Image (cartoon, rainbow, N blue to C red; front, side, top):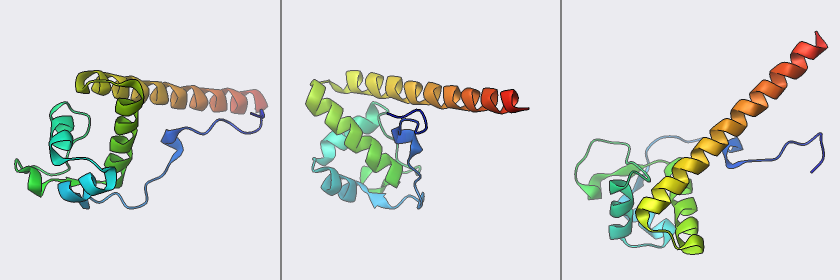
Length: 116
């Protein structure tokens, strides 16, 4: 890693189309899992549908949710985490990414202050 190129993190991805567009069936097909697993992941707060429907068949998810679910499924498979452990791990990863963004902003601010 060169000093001129900061590390790329998942938070550097820009989702162009943020509208809720994937149904539960589409999410399951794209992730290769059964609906019961996605429903359970919703109940643990791993991902949340972007509408107020209480009927899972009417849920809509965004592209960012698909990315999060795919990350969750990789963690579940690779680390053999149960759903509560998975929710906790994802929260920690989100916090790490947020802290990295804060550090990058502070480093940028310090560099601009030193140039003045």
